[in-house]
Image 1 (cartoon, rainbow over the protein chains, first blue to last red):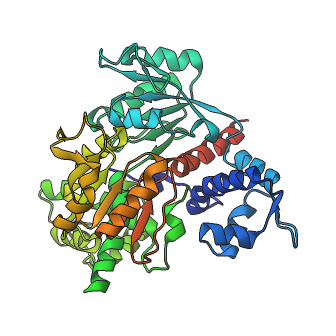
Image 2 (cartoon, each protein chain N blue to C red):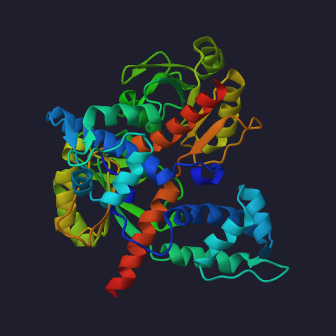
Length: 221
Length: 221
């Protein structure tokens, strides 16, 4: 198994900052719906349980600056976050493996708002092929390569069993996929260094929780 | 929506290090199965695509030190990682919401090795109640509170729809749950500051990938 941090190249913006940007975005949408044109750094920090200096530093990456006494312009900040994260250019994606995790991801609300449009799913189960899951068509795994080429899809989501992960990734990359979001509990690699591979690892996520519980138990004893 | 980083208190060991520990663990198990009693820091780094100094720093937290010329003792390092992450004390957990994401988590291989034992799942769908999912019983949501109390369960996994997340979390905490792993796309809170809440946020994970794709597109143009 692997972890997204393993493949990270040095870059200017830290991953924790990037991970918080959708949270700010979600919060700012709510503020905008409440018709507040400006929001202060202190208010954002207070509502999201952060310290103001962290909020200021995070939002600096978008290029939008808060104005003295009034704060950030909500609409401008929303647009800047969307631009920074590339949500303005919607990425078309395919999903391979329509098992339970695949179903859950196809039904995840909000990906479209975040610039991800899953165009189709692929599976080799005849009971699933030809059906729709959350409005997305499921096609035969055999047709994935030609579909990716024809529709110039650049993002592939892998929710296949671990033993098929590399094989399916190879087909995706051969067909022209530029970025793979891998949920299979297996490390996948590409000979092509320009292909972006991001691993999601439930075991690593649980390790974070587990270490917190462990520290807490030690404290209680 | 929220992010696990939001609730983090200052602590000595960084989250990226903690997230890598299960990856080292998985790798070391393979090395042990190949009957290699020792492994060098350089070899681990090379096999996992990391720099040696990072590996040394990460593994320092376990208290095990590499010996000059031979490296780390594989068995000792495995045990130290397990101890650090609290995997030696298996945490019994319940899962609320046996939808597709719940199914996927119940079927995730390896949680048991990582000190997490999901004892039962709870749902309010009569078609699921009384059945087994990946060998785990599904009980009526109404019985969750008494089950948690009776079995002294300390970990709750939330895979319910967003609108029920807080309500179900409240029942869990009232029943004695000490840590909640929240997969619902909703922020949940607790009046009790000792309750650990970890949010898993697919939108935040996608933001990391999306920003990489965006940077890559800018480079290509």
